[in-house]
Image (cartoon, rainbow, N blue to C red; front, side, top):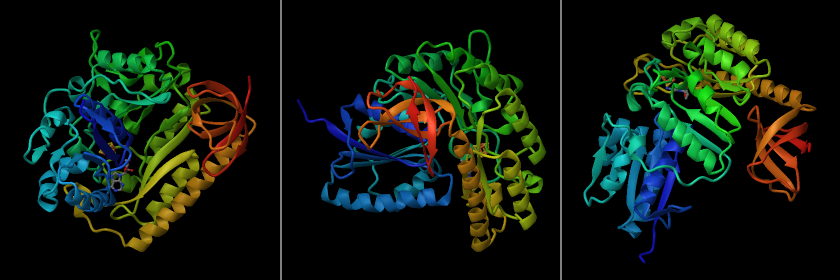
Length: 436
Ligand code: 5AD
Ligand code: SF4
């Protein structure tokens, strides 16, 4: 039998790319590729790229520079670029780095095996009408008890800074039946924790025989799967948090008390310039309603600092919003002008101001995160073990609130969901003891 060909995939960016990389690996697995841990010994290297901020595409070109050297020594090696940079800059990639064999956008992964069989340079960045997930092989490989499941892609919101509506296209929801069968398949292979993914996941409106399903209806259906213990979803837009979704946080025990709800800024002037279509006040009211439904919910957000025109007052408004909400986690970014987006036309702030604001914002978030973590000490939380710890007799898992928890447990098994009393808090994790 021929030696299996080796595939190395590097994933940049969001969780949706992690999911897509897995599915591409499986599609190529059917063509005889097995995963490799390094680019050096691979027959095919696939870079699954992200275009959300400038540095993401710079990383691609520097990685391609390194791969060029590998390919000079091993000319039969194939190099592919997938993901959102492929979508946005496909032709430029082929021009700047002509040793790349194929460029494939996020909507055409199912055509990868066929593209690979060709001996000429290939590019496919269409937005086809067929559902790529339908055409990709069913998921077989699953390690660990947690999995992502993409239910929705694309975005119709057109925030002024964001490339997603251009690179991932308009909103498309997968039909309910497909999601249900994928979720059941995952649970059969040992998954107990599923995070539903979508660029705008709470705008989900997938087809079902009884009429379109909203995200809350989908969650209620998935919660009925025996053996599935935990559900989460990400990423949401505040304007799509409907009443039933808020209610689901109160009445679905499997829906975990963690919600990523990006606000981006606390200044109404900036929110308007960002085309966010919500205000700081409407966001705060929403948070109040979510907390009424699920008082112990932990909230996280995304923030952009240094958006064009952001004044000290605007930034202070963001800091006050953060103080009012009290976040358990957050991702914060310096504004990065993306070609083709409306905000890219506007003059940028000076780098020092942006750096100073980012630093102050992150310090505040870190402080809130630390206080919330310390508040967990003494409490009993569910922990799903996902691996053995570095020390003997130690397990590592995720709490209901998505904190990493180190547990002293000599008999723990990966995939077990246990009750743990939290005894300590460190910078990025908690520690605890297992209760029987
Ligand atoms: N510059 C900086 N951050 C951005 N994001 C999206 N576009 C940009 C940009 N041009 C951030 C937003 C979004 C997260 C995924 O990335 O905060 O929620
Ligand atoms: Fe981008 Fe999110 Fe705004 Fe959509 S809602 S345009 S994905 S930031």
